Length: 173
Image (cartoon, rainbow, N blue to C red):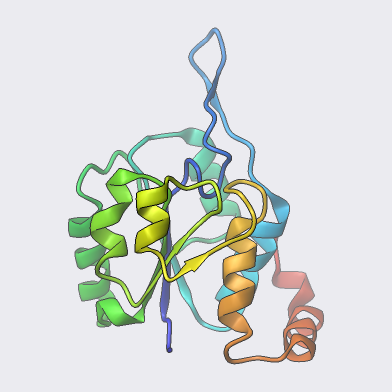
């Protein structure tokens, strides 16, 4: 399998799915640093990264900027159409895409991509669509687990460690 693009949902995948909203309306999200390291490693081997999420959040934009995501789409109701635009721009097919989602709105993409993935805490119908279901819950290292599994299809553990050590200054958690 040759994955060229990893696409992630946010709530329930990069976060645990809970929403923290302050009395002033500010939304807060908790992201896992191990997911950040995995995302940075994927970028180091040339995999492009995208977020397609139904919500809009300054916290997501900040985290995506820190991790240098190639594409960030928020407030999206038709995630599949957005993915079509991305793959057309890159010039790849659905079979070269890995997608991780956790709920009903992710199913249209999960049924199209080459490597559909779900975190452990995804709803059952989503897990049934996934080729790979993590042992970790969303927001608790599920993205890292998925990326490690993907990278281990091409690289040894030692090569991944060497990649980190050689590029350490450019990697963000």
